[in-house]
Image (cartoon, rainbow, N blue to C red; front, side, top):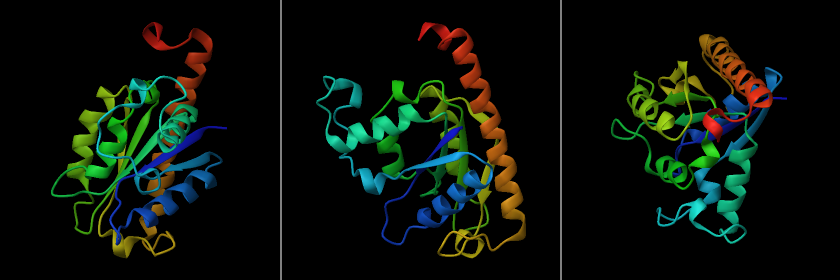
Length: 194
C-alpha cells in the first residue's frame, strides 16, 4: 500500500492546518492509500542547529528520530502549507531542513491554503523550488484551498463541492508517481547510485 506522508505547515494556536491535515488524510484513505501525519507542533524541533545526519546513529533526540523514521517509511510526501507573508511558514521550513537524505527520491505534492482568495499559491511557488533541492520531485498539480476557514469545517469535512474531486485527482496523481518511483527503485535500485 502506498504510504503518503502528510507534512503540515503551521504551529500557531489558531492554525487551520489541523483541518487541512484531517481532510487530506481522509481523502488519502478514501483512495485506498495509507496516510501518515508529520506535524511540526508534535515534533517540536528547536531552530536548526544540527541536522539529523550530523548525529551519530542512535544518538539523535527521540522526536527527531521519530520524524526521520516517518520520512524514510513514506513512499510520497504531501506538504500541506499555509502562506505566511507570501511565504512558507517557518515551522514547516525548520522541520524540513532538519533532514535531507531521508527525503530523497520521494515524489512530493503541494497542497496550500490561506484565508484569502489565492489559496496559498505564493508559498507553493517557494516549495516548488525547495522540495526538488531536497531530492523530492514535485508533481505538476497543486491543490490550493482558498478561504480555508469556509472551505473546511473544524473536523476537516469539505464544505465546498469542488474540493473533494480536486483533492482526489491530486492524490491519485501523487500516488501514481509514488508507485512509479517505488517500482523503479525495486527494479534498478536508487537513482544515481544512491
